[in-house]
Image (tube, rainbow, N blue to C red; front, top):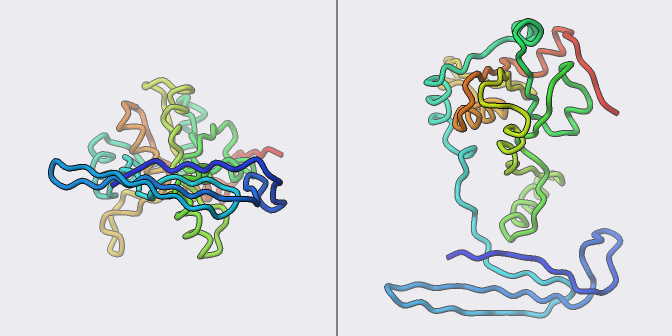
Length: 230
């Protein structure tokens, strides 16, 4: 059972808290399709409650490659010989071998400070849509006091491809980096945003992908060249 959810405000006065929502009649309508054998029955329900039109039943979207199990991601990263490097080695590769540091943190974090010369393409972004599934996720984040919930950036690979060809030398970085190295407590290492990004890159044909072990945190700790944007 699945359907598209949309939100349509009515043309009345706006709220000062949420300017995209209206205060007068809200129509909630949902289309539900029930299937049994070869029979199909469709039912349409609608209610009037005040300033907003919501259509559909909430269903979770299909799993994306970024949501694949970490075990599967790690196996591909090892198979493709994605190498982890520390901050000093990453700096050397950047200066001597024309590697580019791809910072996949949110744009706001990148602007606060990043390795000099790094390129920012965020792998996760603030939730933008208002489907029933997105509303449910916003509510879940808010339950834990988080009012800036994030979602996978669906334009991540498209943005990478607009800046780098498949032979580009890329070092992927996030805040803490994660690791593919096994340990007693983490026999399969630890997943991170940068390792997810590295997985997506090799999955889409990038051939020279490295990973910053220890993340941007270690870059700053080593006092390597950094910059910020106001």
